[in-house]
Length: 407
Image (cartoon, rainbow, N blue to C red; front, side, top):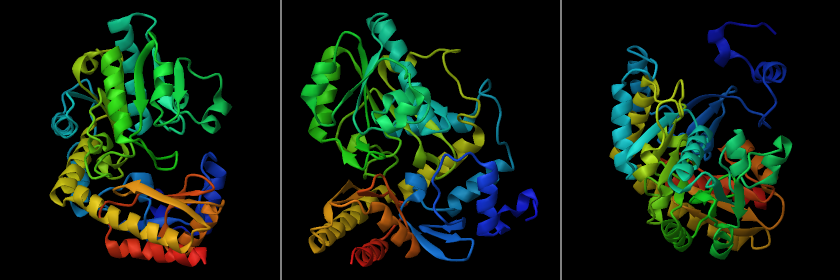
Protein backbone atom coordinates (compact mmCIF):
# COMPACT_ATOMS: atom_id res chain seq x y z
CA UNK A 1 0.00 0.00 0.00
CA UNK A 2 1.36 3.41 -0.93
CA UNK A 3 1.14 6.36 1.40
CA UNK A 4 -0.52 8.57 -1.23
CA UNK A 5 -0.98 12.31 -0.99
CA UNK A 6 -2.99 14.29 1.50
CA UNK A 7 -5.55 15.02 -1.22
CA UNK A 8 -6.08 11.38 -2.18
CA UNK A 9 -7.81 10.26 1.03
CA UNK A 10 -11.21 9.78 -0.65
CA UNK A 11 -9.64 7.62 -3.37
CA UNK A 12 -8.20 4.82 -1.21
CA UNK A 13 -9.99 1.49 -0.92
CA UNK A 14 -11.94 0.30 2.11
CA UNK A 15 -9.17 -2.17 2.95
CA UNK A 16 -6.50 0.56 2.77
CA UNK A 17 -8.53 2.92 4.96
CA UNK A 18 -9.11 0.14 7.49
CA UNK A 19 -5.41 -0.73 7.62
CA UNK A 20 -4.35 2.90 8.06
CA UNK A 21 -6.94 3.34 10.79
CA UNK A 22 -5.69 0.31 12.70
CA UNK A 23 -2.08 1.47 12.45
CA UNK A 24 -2.37 5.18 13.18
CA UNK A 25 -5.67 5.97 14.96
CA UNK A 26 -6.27 5.32 18.65
CA UNK A 27 -8.87 2.58 19.03
CA UNK A 28 -11.57 4.56 20.79
CA UNK A 29 -14.39 3.60 18.40
CA UNK A 30 -15.92 0.26 17.41
CA UNK A 31 -16.24 1.14 13.73
CA UNK A 32 -18.75 -0.39 11.34
CA UNK A 33 -17.29 -2.06 8.20
CA UNK A 34 -17.92 0.80 5.78
CA UNK A 35 -16.13 3.91 4.50
CA UNK A 36 -18.43 6.78 3.55
CA UNK A 37 -16.98 9.11 0.94
CA UNK A 38 -19.90 11.32 -0.13
CA UNK A 39 -23.14 12.71 1.26
CA UNK A 40 -26.11 14.64 -0.10
CA UNK A 41 -29.32 15.40 1.75
CA UNK A 42 -30.28 12.31 3.73
CA UNK A 43 -28.11 9.99 1.60
CA UNK A 44 -24.57 8.67 1.94
CA UNK A 45 -22.37 6.74 -0.50
CA UNK A 46 -19.56 4.39 0.46
CA UNK A 47 -16.21 3.77 -1.20
CA UNK A 48 -17.77 1.03 -3.35
CA UNK A 49 -20.53 3.33 -4.65
CA UNK A 50 -23.35 1.84 -2.55
CA UNK A 51 -26.09 4.29 -1.49
CA UNK A 52 -27.42 4.50 2.08
CA UNK A 53 -30.32 6.28 3.77
CA UNK A 54 -28.86 8.08 6.78
CA UNK A 55 -31.07 7.82 9.87
CA UNK A 56 -28.22 8.68 12.24
CA UNK A 57 -27.00 12.01 10.80
CA UNK A 58 -23.55 11.63 12.34
CA UNK A 59 -25.36 11.13 15.69
CA UNK A 60 -27.86 14.00 15.46
CA UNK A 61 -25.34 16.35 13.83
CA UNK A 62 -26.27 16.81 10.17
CA UNK A 63 -29.64 18.39 10.86
CA UNK A 64 -30.27 20.17 7.56
CA UNK A 65 -28.78 17.34 5.52
CA UNK A 66 -25.39 16.46 4.12
CA UNK A 67 -23.72 19.19 2.05
CA UNK A 68 -26.70 21.53 1.92
CA UNK A 69 -25.87 24.02 -0.86
CA UNK A 70 -26.45 27.09 1.31
CA UNK A 71 -24.23 25.73 4.09
CA UNK A 72 -21.54 24.55 1.67
CA UNK A 73 -21.53 27.94 -0.05
CA UNK A 74 -21.19 29.74 3.29
CA UNK A 75 -18.21 27.55 4.20
CA UNK A 76 -16.50 28.12 0.84
CA UNK A 77 -17.08 31.88 0.91
CA UNK A 78 -15.80 32.31 4.45
CA UNK A 79 -12.86 29.96 3.89
CA UNK A 80 -11.71 32.22 1.06
CA UNK A 81 -12.16 35.35 3.22
CA UNK A 82 -11.08 34.72 6.82
CA UNK A 83 -11.17 31.48 8.78
CA UNK A 84 -9.72 32.32 12.17
CA UNK A 85 -8.41 35.08 14.37
CA UNK A 86 -7.95 35.04 18.12
CA UNK A 87 -10.86 35.68 20.47
CA UNK A 88 -8.79 38.62 21.68
CA UNK A 89 -10.39 40.53 18.78
CA UNK A 90 -13.98 41.27 17.82
CA UNK A 91 -15.65 38.89 15.39
CA UNK A 92 -18.81 40.09 13.58
CA UNK A 93 -19.90 36.56 12.65
CA UNK A 94 -19.67 35.49 16.29
CA UNK A 95 -21.64 38.53 17.43
CA UNK A 96 -24.41 37.91 14.89
CA UNK A 97 -24.62 34.23 15.77
CA UNK A 98 -24.74 34.99 19.50
CA UNK A 99 -27.62 37.39 18.88
CA UNK A 100 -29.52 34.79 16.84
CA UNK A 101 -28.99 32.01 19.37
CA UNK A 102 -30.04 34.24 22.27
CA UNK A 103 -33.25 35.04 20.39
CA UNK A 104 -33.95 31.37 19.65
CA UNK A 105 -33.13 30.14 23.17
CA UNK A 106 -34.44 33.12 25.18
CA UNK A 107 -31.04 33.39 26.81
CA UNK A 108 -28.90 36.51 27.33
CA UNK A 109 -25.26 35.60 26.63
CA UNK A 110 -23.33 32.88 24.81
CA UNK A 111 -19.93 31.23 25.14
CA UNK A 112 -18.69 29.43 22.01
CA UNK A 113 -16.60 26.28 21.90
CA UNK A 114 -16.16 23.22 19.67
CA UNK A 115 -18.31 20.41 21.09
CA UNK A 116 -21.08 19.38 23.43
CA UNK A 117 -18.65 18.17 26.08
CA UNK A 118 -16.93 21.57 26.06
CA UNK A 119 -20.27 23.36 26.27
CA UNK A 120 -21.24 21.23 29.26
CA UNK A 121 -17.84 21.77 30.88
CA UNK A 122 -18.48 25.50 30.59
CA UNK A 123 -21.90 25.07 32.20
CA UNK A 124 -20.37 23.16 35.12
CA UNK A 125 -17.78 25.89 35.67
CA UNK A 126 -20.44 28.61 35.59
CA UNK A 127 -22.60 26.69 38.05
CA UNK A 128 -19.79 26.11 40.55
CA UNK A 129 -18.49 29.67 40.44
CA UNK A 130 -22.05 31.05 40.63
CA UNK A 131 -22.84 28.83 43.61
CA UNK A 132 -19.82 30.00 45.56
CA UNK A 133 -20.39 33.68 44.75
CA UNK A 134 -24.14 33.70 45.37
CA UNK A 135 -24.60 31.13 48.14
CA UNK A 136 -21.21 30.48 49.71
CA UNK A 137 -17.95 28.55 49.34
CA UNK A 138 -19.53 25.15 50.05
CA UNK A 139 -22.20 25.47 47.36
CA UNK A 140 -20.65 23.46 44.54
CA UNK A 141 -22.61 20.19 44.19
CA UNK A 142 -24.57 19.29 41.08
CA UNK A 143 -27.39 16.79 40.61
CA UNK A 144 -27.65 14.83 37.35
CA UNK A 145 -29.67 11.77 36.32
CA UNK A 146 -29.14 8.04 35.91
CA UNK A 147 -28.74 7.14 32.26
CA UNK A 148 -27.46 10.61 31.37
CA UNK A 149 -24.57 11.43 29.08
CA UNK A 150 -22.87 14.83 29.20
CA UNK A 151 -19.49 14.20 27.58
CA UNK A 152 -16.08 12.53 27.99
CA UNK A 153 -13.98 15.21 29.67
CA UNK A 154 -13.22 14.59 33.34
CA UNK A 155 -15.90 17.01 34.52
CA UNK A 156 -18.59 15.77 32.18
CA UNK A 157 -17.73 12.11 32.85
CA UNK A 158 -18.39 12.82 36.52
CA UNK A 159 -21.72 14.37 35.52
CA UNK A 160 -22.58 11.36 33.34
CA UNK A 161 -24.41 8.90 35.59
CA UNK A 162 -23.38 5.72 33.79
CA UNK A 163 -20.71 3.54 35.44
CA UNK A 164 -19.39 2.19 32.11
CA UNK A 165 -18.14 5.69 31.22
CA UNK A 166 -16.84 6.48 34.71
CA UNK A 167 -15.10 3.40 36.10
CA UNK A 168 -11.93 3.46 33.94
CA UNK A 169 -11.18 7.03 35.00
CA UNK A 170 -11.78 7.01 38.74
CA UNK A 171 -11.29 8.83 41.01
CA UNK A 172 -13.88 11.18 39.57
CA UNK A 173 -14.31 14.90 40.05
CA UNK A 174 -16.24 15.10 43.34
CA UNK A 175 -19.50 16.91 44.00
CA UNK A 176 -21.97 15.06 41.77
CA UNK A 177 -25.10 13.22 42.88
CA UNK A 178 -27.44 11.15 40.72
CA UNK A 179 -31.21 10.69 40.76
CA UNK A 180 -33.47 8.43 38.70
CA UNK A 181 -35.06 10.25 35.78
CA UNK A 182 -38.60 11.51 36.47
CA UNK A 183 -38.31 10.77 40.20
CA UNK A 184 -38.99 14.09 41.93
CA UNK A 185 -38.85 12.63 45.45
CA UNK A 186 -35.34 11.34 44.81
CA UNK A 187 -34.24 14.79 43.65
CA UNK A 188 -35.72 16.42 46.76
CA UNK A 189 -33.73 14.00 48.92
CA UNK A 190 -30.47 15.00 47.19
CA UNK A 191 -30.96 18.77 47.37
CA UNK A 192 -28.97 20.43 50.14
CA UNK A 193 -27.30 23.71 51.06
CA UNK A 194 -24.40 22.56 48.87
CA UNK A 195 -26.48 22.15 45.69
CA UNK A 196 -25.70 24.82 43.10
CA UNK A 197 -27.32 23.23 40.02
CA UNK A 198 -29.45 20.49 38.55
CA UNK A 199 -28.36 19.34 35.08
CA UNK A 200 -30.65 17.34 32.81
CA UNK A 201 -31.17 16.31 29.19
CA UNK A 202 -34.81 16.89 28.11
CA UNK A 203 -34.38 13.60 26.27
CA UNK A 204 -31.49 11.29 27.10
CA UNK A 205 -29.81 10.45 23.79
CA UNK A 206 -26.97 8.06 24.62
CA UNK A 207 -29.11 6.64 27.40
CA UNK A 208 -31.59 5.31 24.83
CA UNK A 209 -34.03 8.16 24.03
CA UNK A 210 -35.43 8.35 27.57
CA UNK A 211 -37.85 11.27 27.77
CA UNK A 212 -38.05 13.57 30.79
CA UNK A 213 -41.72 14.07 31.57
CA UNK A 214 -42.79 17.71 30.98
CA UNK A 215 -44.44 17.77 34.41
CA UNK A 216 -41.15 16.60 35.94
CA UNK A 217 -39.19 19.36 34.17
CA UNK A 218 -41.70 21.95 35.38
CA UNK A 219 -41.37 20.60 38.91
CA UNK A 220 -37.58 20.89 38.66
CA UNK A 221 -37.98 24.52 37.59
CA UNK A 222 -40.11 25.19 40.68
CA UNK A 223 -37.66 23.32 42.93
CA UNK A 224 -34.73 25.34 41.57
CA UNK A 225 -36.58 28.63 42.00
CA UNK A 226 -37.53 27.82 45.58
CA UNK A 227 -33.99 26.80 46.56
CA UNK A 228 -31.93 29.30 44.51
CA UNK A 229 -30.45 26.56 42.31
CA UNK A 230 -29.51 26.82 38.63
CA UNK A 231 -31.36 24.60 36.16
CA UNK A 232 -29.09 23.46 33.32
CA UNK A 233 -30.53 21.92 30.17
CA UNK A 234 -28.11 19.81 28.13
CA UNK A 235 -29.62 20.33 24.67
CA UNK A 236 -26.66 18.93 22.76
CA UNK A 237 -28.74 16.12 21.22
CA UNK A 238 -32.38 17.13 21.81
CA UNK A 239 -31.88 20.71 20.64
CA UNK A 240 -31.43 22.42 17.26
CA UNK A 241 -35.03 21.76 16.21
CA UNK A 242 -35.00 17.99 16.58
CA UNK A 243 -38.14 17.78 18.72
CA UNK A 244 -40.10 20.46 16.85
CA UNK A 245 -38.94 23.46 18.90
CA UNK A 246 -35.44 24.87 18.80
CA UNK A 247 -34.79 23.36 22.24
CA UNK A 248 -36.19 20.18 23.70
CA UNK A 249 -36.95 22.07 26.92
CA UNK A 250 -39.08 24.52 24.92
CA UNK A 251 -41.17 21.57 23.77
CA UNK A 252 -41.87 20.95 27.46
CA UNK A 253 -42.49 24.66 28.08
CA UNK A 254 -39.67 25.08 30.62
CA UNK A 255 -36.82 27.60 30.59
CA UNK A 256 -33.42 26.82 32.02
CA UNK A 257 -30.86 29.18 33.48
CA UNK A 258 -28.10 27.62 31.36
CA UNK A 259 -28.51 25.79 28.05
CA UNK A 260 -25.80 23.86 26.22
CA UNK A 261 -25.82 23.19 22.47
CA UNK A 262 -23.67 21.49 19.83
CA UNK A 263 -24.18 18.68 17.27
CA UNK A 264 -26.70 20.14 14.78
CA UNK A 265 -25.79 23.75 15.44
CA UNK A 266 -23.48 23.94 12.40
CA UNK A 267 -24.56 20.89 10.35
CA UNK A 268 -21.37 18.93 10.84
CA UNK A 269 -18.86 21.72 11.34
CA UNK A 270 -17.40 21.49 14.89
CA UNK A 271 -19.17 23.94 17.19
CA UNK A 272 -20.59 24.07 20.68
CA UNK A 273 -22.25 26.82 22.69
CA UNK A 274 -23.18 27.46 26.30
CA UNK A 275 -25.96 30.01 26.81
CA UNK A 276 -27.06 31.57 30.09
CA UNK A 277 -29.44 34.14 31.51
CA UNK A 278 -29.72 36.18 34.69
CA UNK A 279 -26.74 36.29 37.01
CA UNK A 280 -25.38 33.08 35.47
CA UNK A 281 -24.83 34.99 32.21
CA UNK A 282 -22.32 37.34 33.84
CA UNK A 283 -20.56 34.91 36.18
CA UNK A 284 -17.51 34.27 33.99
CA UNK A 285 -15.02 37.11 33.54
CA UNK A 286 -11.80 37.37 31.49
CA UNK A 287 -9.42 34.63 32.54
CA UNK A 288 -12.12 32.28 33.91
CA UNK A 289 -12.66 30.31 30.72
CA UNK A 290 -11.68 30.28 27.07
CA UNK A 291 -11.46 28.32 23.85
CA UNK A 292 -8.88 28.85 21.13
CA UNK A 293 -11.11 27.85 18.23
CA UNK A 294 -14.48 28.63 19.83
CA UNK A 295 -16.64 30.95 17.75
CA UNK A 296 -14.11 31.42 14.97
CA UNK A 297 -15.35 33.08 11.78
CA UNK A 298 -15.62 29.91 9.68
CA UNK A 299 -17.61 28.01 12.30
CA UNK A 300 -19.95 30.94 12.94
CA UNK A 301 -20.60 31.56 9.25
CA UNK A 302 -21.48 27.88 8.92
CA UNK A 303 -23.81 27.97 11.92
CA UNK A 304 -25.56 31.11 10.66
CA UNK A 305 -26.24 29.43 7.32
CA UNK A 306 -27.46 26.29 9.09
CA UNK A 307 -29.91 28.22 11.25
CA UNK A 308 -31.15 30.09 8.19
CA UNK A 309 -31.93 26.81 6.43
CA UNK A 310 -33.51 25.34 9.56
CA UNK A 311 -35.98 28.24 9.77
CA UNK A 312 -36.56 29.00 6.07
CA UNK A 313 -37.31 25.37 5.19
CA UNK A 314 -39.49 24.81 8.29
CA UNK A 315 -37.44 21.80 9.31
CA UNK A 316 -38.68 22.00 12.89
CA UNK A 317 -42.20 21.57 11.54
CA UNK A 318 -41.01 18.70 9.39
CA UNK A 319 -39.50 17.06 12.47
CA UNK A 320 -42.93 17.05 14.11
CA UNK A 321 -44.84 15.85 11.05
CA UNK A 322 -42.46 13.18 9.83
CA UNK A 323 -41.38 12.20 13.35
CA UNK A 324 -45.01 11.56 14.27
CA UNK A 325 -45.49 9.44 11.15
CA UNK A 326 -42.33 7.46 11.89
CA UNK A 327 -43.28 6.80 15.51
CA UNK A 328 -46.75 5.62 14.46
CA UNK A 329 -45.19 3.32 11.87
CA UNK A 330 -42.84 1.84 14.46
CA UNK A 331 -45.74 1.25 16.82
CA UNK A 332 -47.57 -0.55 14.03
CA UNK A 333 -44.42 -2.65 13.60
CA UNK A 334 -44.50 -3.37 17.33
CA UNK A 335 -48.01 -4.76 16.91
CA UNK A 336 -46.66 -7.10 14.20
CA UNK A 337 -43.83 -8.36 16.45
CA UNK A 338 -45.17 -8.17 20.02
CA UNK A 339 -42.74 -10.84 21.23
CA UNK A 340 -39.68 -9.00 19.92
CA UNK A 341 -40.49 -5.28 20.22
CA UNK A 342 -41.10 -3.88 23.70
CA UNK A 343 -41.82 -0.26 22.82
CA UNK A 344 -41.29 2.61 20.41
CA UNK A 345 -40.81 6.08 21.88
CA UNK A 346 -39.60 9.51 20.92
CA UNK A 347 -40.33 13.14 20.18
CA UNK A 348 -39.99 14.67 16.74
CA UNK A 349 -37.10 13.02 14.92
CA UNK A 350 -35.46 11.65 18.06
CA UNK A 351 -36.83 8.11 18.18
CA UNK A 352 -36.00 4.77 19.77
CA UNK A 353 -37.14 1.21 19.16
CA UNK A 354 -36.63 -1.03 22.19
CA UNK A 355 -36.63 -4.81 21.89
CA UNK A 356 -37.67 -7.42 24.42
CA UNK A 357 -34.62 -9.50 23.51
CA UNK A 358 -30.96 -8.45 22.94
CA UNK A 359 -31.03 -8.22 19.14
CA UNK A 360 -30.34 -4.51 18.59
CA UNK A 361 -26.78 -4.93 17.29
CA UNK A 362 -27.84 -7.77 15.01
CA UNK A 363 -30.59 -5.52 13.60
CA UNK A 364 -28.12 -2.66 13.08
CA UNK A 365 -25.95 -5.00 11.03
CA UNK A 366 -28.99 -5.99 8.94
CA UNK A 367 -29.95 -2.36 8.42
CA UNK A 368 -26.46 -1.44 7.25
CA UNK A 369 -26.49 -4.34 4.78
CA UNK A 370 -29.90 -3.05 3.63
CA UNK A 371 -28.52 0.45 3.05
CA UNK A 372 -29.83 2.08 6.27
CA UNK A 373 -27.60 3.89 8.78
CA UNK A 374 -28.70 3.90 12.43
CA UNK A 375 -27.13 2.80 15.70
CA UNK A 376 -27.73 0.88 18.91
CA UNK A 377 -27.40 2.56 22.29
CA UNK A 378 -27.53 -0.85 23.99
CA UNK A 379 -28.17 -4.50 23.19
CA UNK A 380 -31.92 -3.83 23.19
CA UNK A 381 -32.34 -0.27 21.89
CA UNK A 382 -32.05 1.30 18.43
CA UNK A 383 -31.65 5.06 18.04
CA UNK A 384 -32.89 7.03 15.04
CA UNK A 385 -31.83 10.70 14.79
CA UNK A 386 -31.94 11.43 11.04
CA UNK A 387 -31.49 14.73 9.23
CA UNK A 388 -34.57 16.88 9.77
CA UNK A 389 -35.24 16.82 6.01
CA UNK A 390 -36.32 13.15 5.84
CA UNK A 391 -39.70 12.24 4.35
CA UNK A 392 -42.46 9.77 5.11
CA UNK A 393 -41.19 7.66 2.21
CA UNK A 394 -37.78 7.52 3.90
CA UNK A 395 -39.45 6.34 7.11
CA UNK A 396 -41.31 3.61 5.24
CA UNK A 397 -37.99 2.41 3.80
CA UNK A 398 -36.55 2.10 7.31
CA UNK A 399 -39.61 0.29 8.65
CA UNK A 400 -39.57 -2.14 5.71
CA UNK A 401 -35.90 -2.91 6.41
CA UNK A 402 -36.65 -3.43 10.10
CA UNK A 403 -39.50 -5.78 9.24
CA UNK A 404 -37.29 -7.92 7.02
CA UNK A 405 -34.71 -8.11 9.78
CA UNK A 406 -37.28 -9.22 12.34
CA UNK A 407 -38.85 -11.96 10.23
